[in-house]
Image 1 (tube, protein in one colour):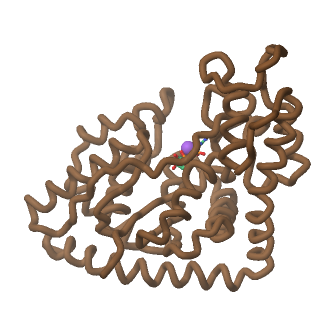
Image 2: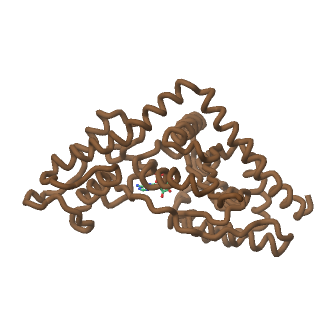
Image 3: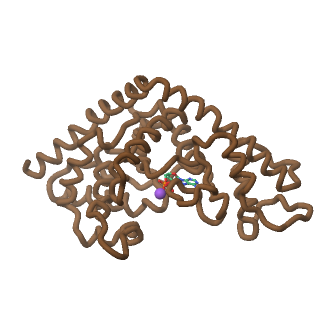
Length: 321
Ligand code: ADP
Ligand code: NA
């Protein structure tokens, strides 16, 4: 019996944040028991917009180490560029996709440069993502709302390919991503904390040293309410406090008995540091033992090559190659 396969990709587009940990990585760690999980560092996705080779290399290795440090080592961990089938299948699917449907992708419309030209890879990125998915034949693909249209494209391409060239692909279902906490920026609590934020003051990085974490939480935006009962959730009128309370609870703390913003921030700081400490300790251990990390990713790469080779071969053969 084989557990249902689940595929997740993370793009090395910045330093991982507390939002990524609580919203995405923790649910993945929790799902490892029930699923055959593949978790990839999608370094190719990070090349679809302007990129710097040295920055890409260092972000990719940091992300690879952090995936192990947060406890995803019961998954098959891999780096997308080390499994050539992703790029190979992407070309075949570019022969199935149309420019019209790619032009309708909302993310492309949002991210393309309004002045000057964008990389062609930004336009074809959803096709690469379709290849990422279809190679692993997962039955379900859990995604957030922002990626839903891309998974629907992967479904459309699989159906069209199967109809035109023969039944090669499993058509994946779009599933709701496992629920994790949603963490907002500490300085702008109405937008989500993001690794691609230009303003690091509101973003807690998983590798931020404790004194940096303390300072960022101490400076988090609150509000002018000083009355009794000021520490309470109210997403409309008190987004900063609501976010701090959410983070506190997601990090295992309790909001009981906190009556001042100072006390709330101290409790949040303790809870966040408690969550980051083991991650940072394991990360430091991995940096000291690069051979172990390489072994984890070499093993993942071997399994990915094994799983994807027959799917790529069937697609090539069906298309006349
Ligand atoms: P980022 O905006 O940090 O670059 P991505 O858009 O690459 O993050 O998303 C990576 C994963 O992390 C997704 O599963 C996404 O839902 C999750 N995620 C990103 N930011 C947050 C956040 N602030 N709170 C909760 N989950 C988040
Ligand atoms: Na992003």
